[in-house]
Length: 83
Image 1: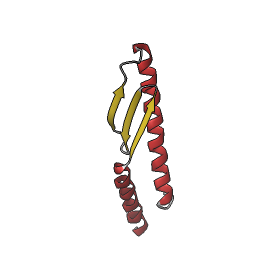
Image 2: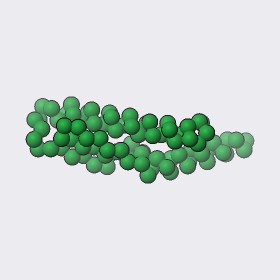
Image 3: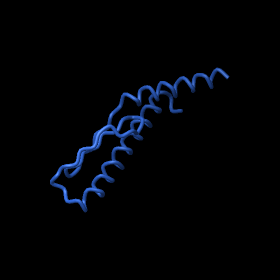
Image 4: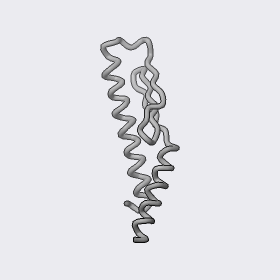
């Protein structure tokens, strides 16, 4: 029972730490910033990018940023005892 409380406390600590994280990805004139809760904080799109390329570049930025947040979360879980 006590182990369950320890695990819950560790998960809360990880969540608190993740909230502080921010990931920024920039590609071909598109910049995306996502926080550790995987919420979009900022998007910047250069006016020089052709309309037909914006969606693809934006999609790639989001995917890379999400992957980075997931890697940070996995690393933090490992550091806190490998839940």
